[in-house]
Length: 269
Image (tube, rainbow, N blue to C red; front, side, top):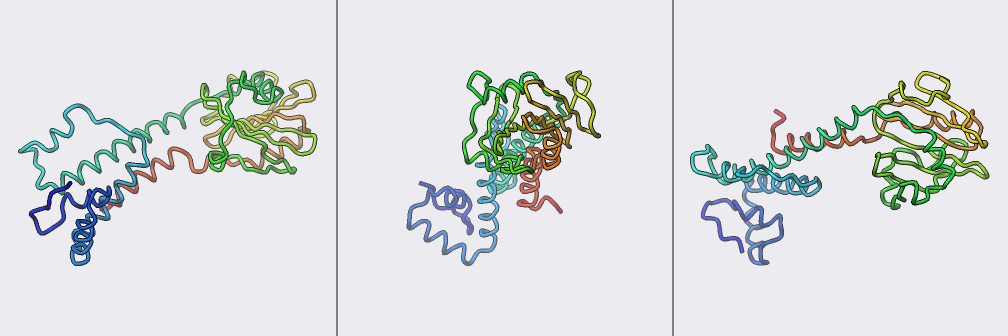
């Protein structure tokens, strides 16, 4: 159990309070102290905000000796409060840097739809052999592609293939079926299927055979491939309704997390 802090402030008890480690009597005493101590209330708010931020991000292990160097005598840390806040900021910043780096790499990736594969997946109906796995309902809520497309197409399911990070959504409107494949990155048009014909800036189309048609659309940060048995005009209308970019993208979420760290600790000026 955390020991009483000798200073007039709560100190380490604040972290224990946030983590729920205090006994009932200790929590009552701590809450009573907070009512009359603005400094401790400010530190509690910072500690709680950092805890929530770090819990919501992937773990990053610091290099060997990181904590020891921060806490050893002579390192230049004035007090334990600075150590605690410094550790929290360093951990959160390291995580945010990792996520931003990953997101930047994804956003700069060049992708080229493999149309033969996507047509086969559409025809097969996302059998396990295609490599696609069905996404749970709670994950579909965050998809960039809408639940209903122009032309009355309703989303019947969503799927993800981990091997190449392709997300797909299957739609139906009466007897017409459409699959929208989403790839994050910039289009490598040098590797496009030679049968594709340019239809508009950032758009290509082709007859895929067996009554199927395919459209490839480039948006800011994302490439959509639409395969279906609807007319080419309908597929183009469907494509026009797709968002210009993932919202919010992984990179934007990482930047938001970094901004939260900065403003939580007053580093924004």
